[in-house]
Image (cartoon, rainbow, N blue to C red; front, side, top):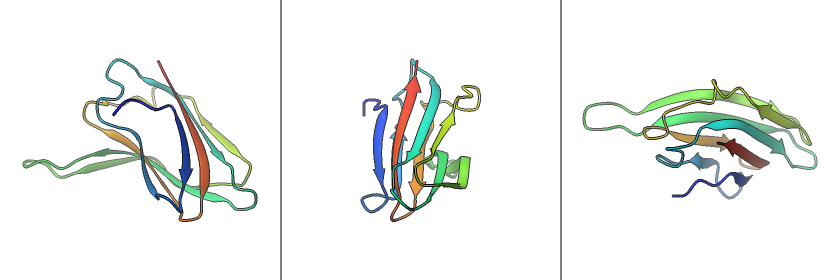
Length: 111
């Protein structure tokens, strides 16, 4: 899968969304993530996490960057600490889980 920097996340379509797949950013690093709640009247609840599939010798692993974060309608959250956003993209996927009626736009800046 090729890296896609822009995502329209709609909870009614998919609650669990892969933002960065394994090997998408082998020669790049995430420098920032912008998450905007584009709903006209409702807050959104967001989980942003790293996930590593289980193997025959190890259980799956999940590491949360954000857990149950409420973003009010019309508000944008910017994550711009590239040390916090650094992860081994040859091992981990980056996912976002949202509520069933949430509507968010996500922009990922990578270099």
